[in-house]
Length: 183
Ligand code: IMP
Ligand code: MG
Image (cartoon, rainbow, N blue to C red; front, side, top):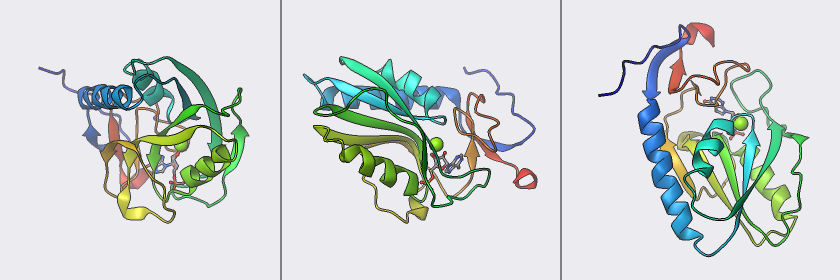
């Protein structure tokens, strides 16, 4: 039996508990390992939100792999996409001819990921796929093909397991919904 979860005072309710997150990541890792069998991967972790997801996912992918990081900002402190995506940190190695898997925390409007896919596509990788922990399908403004998705969510603002609210709450071990009074 799992331990009762202590919630943070900012959290309205827990949406996905730590065990369910790990179970789903194990499934995703197995699926990715099978799909890319015989190939080598470059995992591109989109900072900061995907840092925990990537660290758990990479250990469930049984393939030769390299890890690289990219940081973009799109939201500032608001809870809706600004439409402006800025590269804060670029990849450290070329992805030309590589099989690239972008690992992102969450897709909402799709603005952030469609921009990242576009600029990485221009660098002539062998192929690019997208793996997101959470997908909010109700809110797409840009069409982004999501190849691997951990969880489909409703249109609620969530935090924890890497996801932040104004930079905070990334350290929560679960994914939860922020109380309306804090938003
Ligand atoms: P999009 O550009 O609208 O798809 O938003 C994607 C980015 O916004 C993600 O990389 C997150 O950093 C952030 N984001 C979107 N929804 C949430 C949320 O519910 N919680 C925390 N961050 C979010
Ligand atoms: Mg993010």
